[in-house]
Length: 520
Image 1 (tube, rainbow, N blue to C red):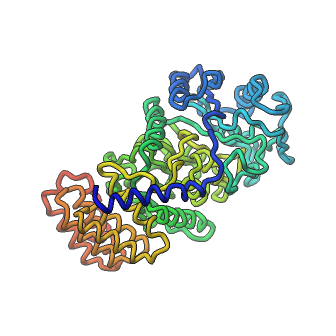
Image 2 (image 1 turned 45 degrees about the vertical axis):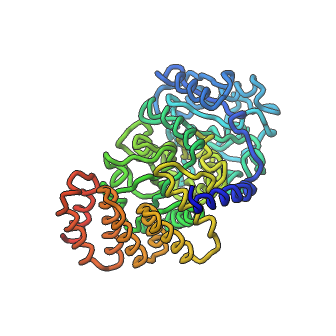
Image 3 (image 1 turned 90 degrees about the vertical axis):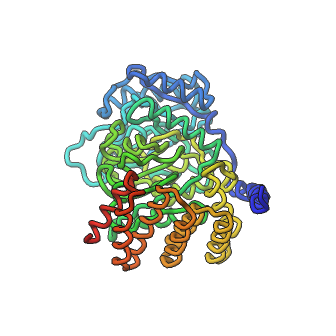
């Protein structure tokens, strides 16, 4: 082990208690989790049993509810098949610590939602593939924000409230609280709800396995932020994304940020993506739709769109199902129009995730409204940074990400130039092109394009790998274009397309499209 790695080990060991001290009180969420499946839907019971086994959830908390096998149900069906039976179940199993709401009590469309007394035995519901996820609209031409359609999941977060509204959403008292869910204020009667669903059973099993694997080995890789350059009433969405990028930077997670109005172009190389947040198209397209693209194990991804989760079981429509089919372990979405202000705030979600919250906690902590349109797809118990940030040294290809993260954290508070100099010096000594590339991404994130270009060229000189060389040259061409050096970018792209080494590389198509967009 080199002197530098020994130093990193010492640093990690010293740093971990400090990072974990920032986490608030621990919570064994798995011990307070119930799993719900549909025995009439093929595979639902088996998936529930598999998840319960992997998360050590006792069999008595794995519950079958016979309900519609359709994606969408009416409000009456929701009350009769899901909400009512679940209320009775909580009461009969003594999962409430006080009298539960009466299942047959008519719900009112207005008025203040009154919580029952706090309960302690079940705070998390996991809904398995096979349960409906949409509640259809019944009202005719409702006023804006007074619609009565909703996601099943968001409605069930308010299961313990005696009179949650039907029209419109309910203010989420857990929104933006700094405490972990069991210790938050004014959350009596609320549940963390997550859904393990997707295009097929094998995808769901993989989502379960990937979350647990990433917890054990560490989630190391790079983040991707895809801006849309929106303004006006949509400015908030852009700010959530740029704020998320800054959170990742501070946490030592390299960030690739796309600043064009369009989604990332088809075949654009995005290796080792562990976090993706972007907007704004209705169906998956561009780089993430490329056949060659695959998220890294344990990845969390979300593309913000009003109807991103209108379908969960398609591999090419909307965003939720396709992101999962390309390897994401977790995604989020909306089953109907949610309005931007009531969607999950990416900046809050990522802040909480990096603090060590579970995916379920972080998602609902970042969502202003309940009884609304949102859905969390993935294991709500998944806690990728539960052991703190920078506690993994990484193996094989992950080592560069661990070294990068360790250096950024160790030099936190130092001028940015010191961090980049330290990374560059080490990468040069050890001939680590990927570490040079990650340092270039840091310079690009800070809009220091000349530095980034120099680092990318340096990285090229230290590798012979065709995929890596092509990626570095594509990134350099894009930065030249952004830096108003179009002629140099076009020349570089033409050279790429002439090079036989890149003929079989999927990313060659990105070079062709970029050159075409620049006028050839």
